[in-house]
Image (cartoon, rainbow, N blue to C red; front, side, top):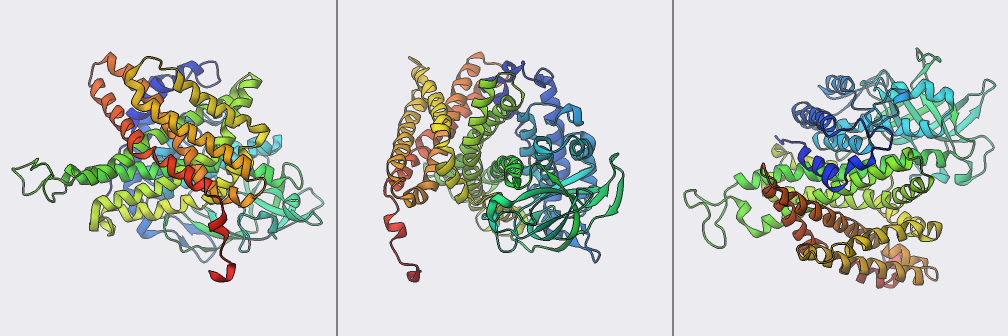
Length: 598
């Protein structure tokens, strides 16, 4: 059975030594986030994940969710008790506003909690994650009455949440949706339609489920300009939160799917259900994007989380499994064979996973800190710059971290060989669970198009210029520090290739938009490599400084990070050249064949 240990030491190093979280003390919630408090909170969550959630991951996979005759859904054995413990810990609302019952801690802490939960049990983690997404949308766009009714109960876990976008005939193109909203005399609307692929659409963990549903008000304009967003609770509730009658919303079926069996992915039927408009009429997509952006960052964390737990188990197996002898001669002559970790190709796979994990975690935490600046700073310019960062990095984090997270789960499975293909060791479940992250909340091809088509040119390229400026500035900083040259020089080369790719798209895409479409995924991954390389440079600099302090095994731990960073620079970052070459090839061969030739 797989095991999991939360990477608490890595998180504390990133927060304290790389990003200097103490420098954010002027922002609300940061003064309370002392190193001792953060370590205590994350330590408790990590223990809960190791002791409670990890053993339930296989249970969820084998038992799954069951739909009852009355349309209700039961979650796998043990999930309800684990959810009660999660709620009791107060961890769902760790970063939520204090005025609505949250702890108000930095978003970086909440994202770390999210990572730990997803590594231990992705199916389980999705239930509270969707509640947080719903609360973010209501906080940004709801009325005072809606906030007062829904936020406290979503934040403390009494109520759960969902987002309802997809319909049988439309997914990404939401302008085609057919779910209808009929306005009523009392100001409510009657919602009628069917939604599919609704994660955590129905379950028995919380006493109520708050569905955020996109629908078209009768007479609204066609396309996305006529889409509105409604709050449709499973049970209607009075102003005091007391539950009333069951609403006309039900689970028609549970999807039979490849992975995440412990999460109820539902077909939801709305049969004249009572809903209340959230935000402005016909501007539902703008309101829903608050939840979608929150969810996209969360899905990126899922890619990292599964890569981390897969790596931990692959590394443990590689140290135990005996097969063959080291190429330079036996390393363990007293054993029948050497452990497979002595073989360079096994090391290649393990180092690829580890080098990605550490840099990806840094990228998530860096962006989480920007999120706090965007929402908590009193300086308008700081808020704008941080918001620019969030918009630019969201598709990169979602697309790159989930693509590589899945690839790393496959690498971990490969380390196990034949044992990775059978269910006993859990690797095949990680592969199946990781696969969905590349698809939901906007397939990764859509993330790449969003990056190239919307985020790069937005505001005259202001966000990209700020990112490039930050990386270029860091490249120039080391000066005569020769020890950082193995990290700085490769990043400088990759940044230049990113700038070349950007210039090529700016010159060619206006005349042939298909050039942008054909190169978008490569551009996203080129951008991701530069962002991860930048993180490794910051990690390396902090590791060198911390290593010089010595004491308590610090030098050894920091040296491990420096070695992992060198591996990334030497063996992973050079892929930037291949991405640039593919981008410059344009769309000609991609689009040349007639449709009938496929």
